[in-house]
Image 1 (cartoon, helix red, strand yellow):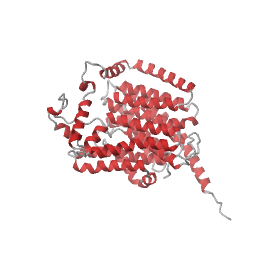
Image 2 (tube, rainbow, N blue to C red):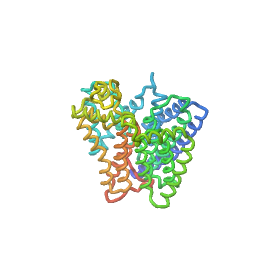
Image 3 (cartoon, one colour):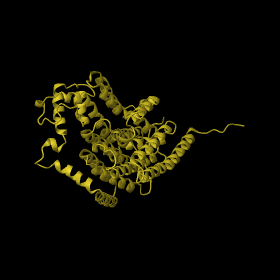
Image 4 (cartoon, rainbow, N blue to C red):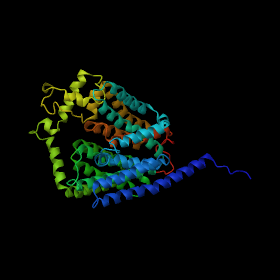
Length: 466
């Protein structure tokens, strides 16, 4: 008897079909689990809820070594949950603060050839910037902080491996958005409800839970057209997460969230659809803000400080203006950088004559801004490399010939630029959107240039195979 010949195309189609079925099964399942855990949070303490979801995320991330699509859903859970995990789970002992970073480095070590397949100009810029951080660690006055910074920044490469391996199917991007935005909204609401009975988290860190949900909605929006009511659902979840960002009172995150909202509005086509989305988001905002009156009042008070002429710049910006001014002076003294992780030590050594207000002088203070941190610690080369890396998102989107990819590339450039005004390398949400959009743009560049991406076609491959 002769063996049955199976064509490579048939094998690929069977693999794509199995992956689609896997996504369509696990996407709704993980979403329902997330809703169930946060719903149980009404009677359970928030630490237990976070621990359960962290275990789910890590379980999927581990299974993702063999089933890439599930791994992508897992890192969506973990990146979204990151602010609460660091506060309530990874607090010491075996479960260290860098546990997720360690895992991403391990994945990077397992699949180094993925980066070789993804190599292009933008990734080379990112790698050069990361290499510069590593080199300038050797001259840092604070080696331990510099190592923490490296762990945080190198996370983007581990996430890039997950996106490249698991993002082949359009459905993966849609369910990634649904899962992330659901986890973000449920977790933020649970945190607000338990705020009086649990340890409070820095608002600028907490804001990156709903911000990550917003980022995921933006990435999933072009692929939501293949699902009935897919785009309105993501727009509604994005609106809810934007309101939750406002309630954190993190002003920098509010600006970043507004950029995401503008992207959503521009990307949705049709006046009627835009009107429905605006009305739906307005209704969500009214309901949500009316339920958390104290947080709403505090958030609006924080915004009012920025325009109150009777409040000094130091108080209006919570000292960020002083950090930025001192950072520029440090850069002028050492334009090539003083070493990765060295900002806080350099700040603590400033004298009162180096500061206009004397705020924080003599104490260790973080830069609280990625741009200032890079400027001071890695100098002109660091700012140049990272700035070109961000600009490459827009250039790649424009070269793709796709409206969706151009808008996404521009969104990545704008949001990552804005995010680094008020946060440093530790926020996983920043690297989440960076890795996701890089993967989509790289996949689009590999496609035929004469055709636009058709996200709604379920058989379309969107990423590099492992």
